Length: 162
Image (cartoon, rainbow, N blue to C red; front, side, top):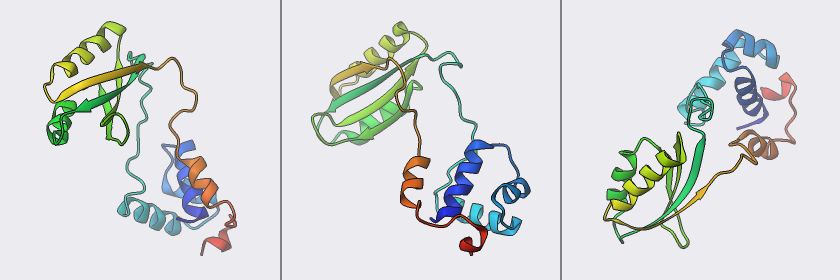
């Protein structure tokens, strides 16, 4: 990735419904260049989707929690299947440290969250869970600051993109 790729991703974030021609105008590069970059970013798996971003609070799911799970040894596949069966599980990661899996959950109420937690605790391969309720976003999910920090020394004028 270079500075043009990062600029392109930032333009897509700022203008999610923009077309290729408008992106080329915004970035000051040829339409074909923009299309080729988009195609490569998609092919390489860097650009994984085109929205929409959903505000879960506005959609009625204002209670969020992180849940650490300790699981039976060798049971990651079974636990993965169980977690995928629960729509409230937004994401889950196998981790190192004191727990084995870290999950992010969303619920419409504390009672709804409790139902999900109880359902997870009933699964025999989950030996222990610890939940932490989110009070507010401090830093919302983001990727562009990281990408910008890596490519900040690259010139951003059109000739440098060639």
